[in-house]
Amino acid sequence: MGELDEAAVDEAMSEDPDEALALLADLTGATDPALRALARRLAGRLMLDVARRGDASRRGTGRMTLKPFAPEEGDLDIDASIDALAAVRRGSPADPEGLRVRGWTRPGTALCLVLDRSGSMGGAPLASSAIAAAAVASRAPEDYSVVVFGRDVVVVKSQDAPKDPERVVTDVLALRGHGTTDLAGALLEAGRQLSRSRAARRITLVLSDCRATVEGDPIAATASLDEVAVVAPASDDEEATEFARRAGARLVTVDGPSSVPAAIAAALRD
Image 1: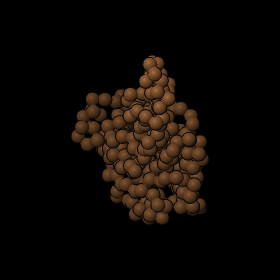
Image 2: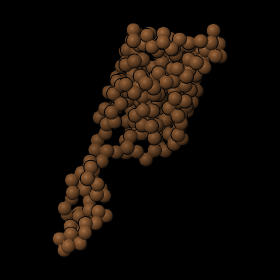
Image 3: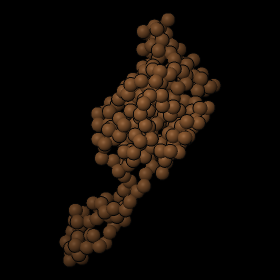
Image 4: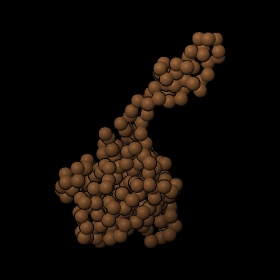
């Protein structure tokens, strides 16, 4: 009791990562306090590592803008730098403050991850949620939030408050399921979280089968959201597919926890 063989966990990860991640997620709810604490620490580190191995490239629609002079920022804009260049021709030393370059600027991206903890949340579903939190923390470390919903809607990490990524992951792992599903309430909270961001692109990422079981209109709740993407279990995606169609959201599916980072990358791709 109270011991966890990390070498055995590494071996299990090499043989069947989804099964190993599911088992580790279950151990984070162990009745033995010492084992539970060890499992949460190991799971937090491991799931961040799994998320970072996925496709974490940041994508977005860029635009050409003028910037202060820096050789790596783009090509010199002659028209915008004409006064400084004229001074050089008259024999004065070049003044970098008067030079401008033209280069691509990518807008910031804000993310709100919405996690479903309804029903029985443990094993693979819990591991998937934790890895999703880790992946979002890696993609948008300065501008993201995590909202968890079941019977109630809980903000695990708010948009404008810094929080250590490993702490976010372990907090998600500490959650257990609640029977009903307030999807509409979670989407409304996502809108409130993202309204605090100044990012040019604001995306709500929903990890759920989208099976709402309480009053509220999830489709209407998406009206104030700029972009919505849904990550659903491949074995149970019928209602998520219908929700995505009606909401105009992108949909990707996952087979297990280890496929979550790549699925998120695909869901967020322009």
